[in-house]
Each structure stands twice: as C-alpha cells, then as structure tokens.
Image 1 (cartoon, rainbow, N blue to C red):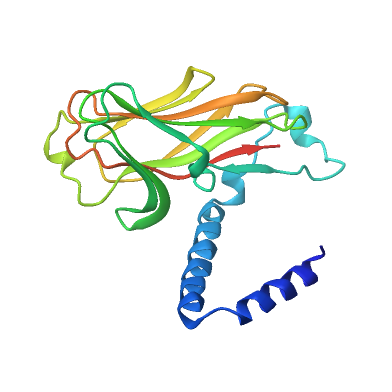
Image 2: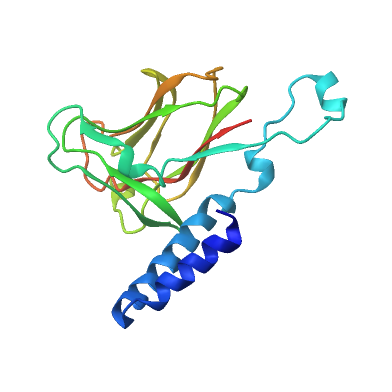
Length: 217
C-alpha cells in the first residue's frame, strides 16, 4: 500500500470514531509525535561513527551509509524485567523523566531493596551492520534526595551477551552521556541488559535511562 492510500484509509477510519475516541486519538498522536522526537534530540554528530583510520577519514565515501536504529523505549513491551534477588521496592516503566531542566522519555529503573534490577532485550542484528554503538543518557530524577546521603549511590550497568561493557555510579540529579562501541555482531541474535543496583542502599534511587538507542551502520 503506497503512503497516499494509507493516509486515506486512516482518514476514513477516523471519520467513524466517536468524540471520546477522537480525543483519545489526539492524545495518542501527540504522545507518539513527542516520543518520535526524543531520539532525534541527539545531534547527528553524536550518533555518527567517527573514522579511526586516517586514510579512511581522508577518503570520500562512494555513497552515504544507512543507519539502523533500535529504540529500546519503543520496544520496551518486548523486554523482560527481573530482579537478581527479591523484587520488593523495584519500579520499572517508561515515562518522561526530568533531570535538572531537561526532560527526556526514559526507562525508569528504580532498583529493588536488595540486589539489582534487570531489563533484558533479545534482538537480531542485521547482517549488513558492521559497526554498532549504544547511546543513552543516565540520570536520577528531580526530587530525589539521594545527594543528601554522600555514601548513597546507584550503579548503572550495560551488558551484551552477559558481558559488562560499561558501568558507572551516580548520586546527582543530572544527565550523563553514555556511548559504548560494541563488538562486531552482524547477523547475530544478541541479549542486551540494562541494570541498576542500589549497592546496599536503594533509598531515593530514582534511576532513569534517557532515550536509549542501539545504532548500527
């Protein structure tokens, strides 16, 4: 079905909706539009792969490379959420998150009282993807009092196929950039895990992953 036919089909269906349904549809469209714009907040320079070889950097590519983007928020419903111990105190969901003055659509991942929270994805990497990168921002939502306890930190960890490729600890309500280059995984079925850990004190661990993306070229 060409795009014009799709638009006409949607318009015909909208015409049959009740006023209440039209209001719900308007809200849904507004949310989807906002959600779509979230990952576009990344500058193109932040998403691109820099050349590491001087000869490649000087060369003029024959044609632009296509970009494959796997939005972990968009596919959150397909993820598996677990706790390494008991799940008491854990809160994991998708919602807007405000850190300082910047709001982003995020995965909220408050760790449980004991142990860690794990959000796991299973996905297939296209066979023509030769370079792969994970991009996100990690933060602690405004309103958290975690900084009032100087020894209270939340750990963020990123795993691929059971191997930890990145980690950090935070106790400030700011956004921090995450950029992780992945090994060659073209054509493979892989497991990705986002993990947060209260490190023995989960109070005020309002941890969030802002606009997490897996980007391939």
